[in-house]
Image (cartoon, rainbow, N blue to C red; front, top):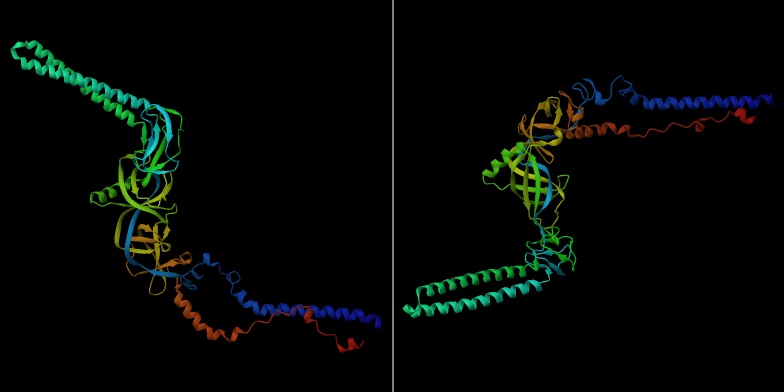
Length: 434
């Protein structure tokens, strides 16, 4: 009898473990079956995104949670946006106007200079000598002129004792010497100008670029490279283009005496870098692109704009007073154009076609299709279709508050399913005694 005892004990334990596992599965099914039964996949329904009339997004299904906003009025600025290129207001390549040796360079690369500041010096000795020579020639001719005038005065004083021909000849001599002196004065002026050109000064306010010629080099007036390039960046210019369709509106505003404001912003359209005014509308349209070129001038007081850079340009065309606006996310686009979902008093939605006049920031200017005070859906539109029922945040908060007392008894935590080893019952007393 003792030889059969191990086999009986092992079989009993196997049966006990199987019973415990089945009991655990039954307990889990008891707790989780209601939630699985209500799943749309097990109950024959479909996912919310493809819900039909009986689904969550349908008029006969559960209300769709949404956010709403009322159509309001406010002043809306109308901007024309474009990509602009920053250019220096003035750019000058400083060149020598005389030939000679560059004996001094008096600026630093990248230095800010004022108009009239001395930038470089050409060897002036040759030009100073020419100037002094011109003065000496003038003085010599002036002395001859003075002598000729005195002779003419004596001839005239002698009267009939001097022939008329002698007087006429002396008078012509005086006029000839007067012309010579005038030519000498012109030569002196030319020599003075040439001498002044040996001092090279800044023609404009600006910033010096790279030095193109070093001290000791021979420079010539015919050189095209120049000594340095100066760029004026305060103020600074921005060149941009707009479609030719905007030209009529721009010209109309200018004809009314308006100075159109221009904003230079970051590349993403946010963060104003500087503000200025429209300076120029080009005199012809580019036939290749159908665009018109415009130029704005900005003070650039903080030097945040730099020649050659790109900025987003916003030209303020006008301001629409008391325009109807809605949040931009509320506007959807369908096959027949833009539309919104309007909320009805019955807490359903209807599709309302609208005409969008402009988009500014996160607001859309509505030209037609809505009235002030109407309520539209701004969030949750993806699950809506005409006739869908909706629920608002205040409705959900109220419903949640009403369910709290009823849900209190169910707050008892669900006990965990027993594990198989813990469910093995103790061996019977008969087995223990054996």
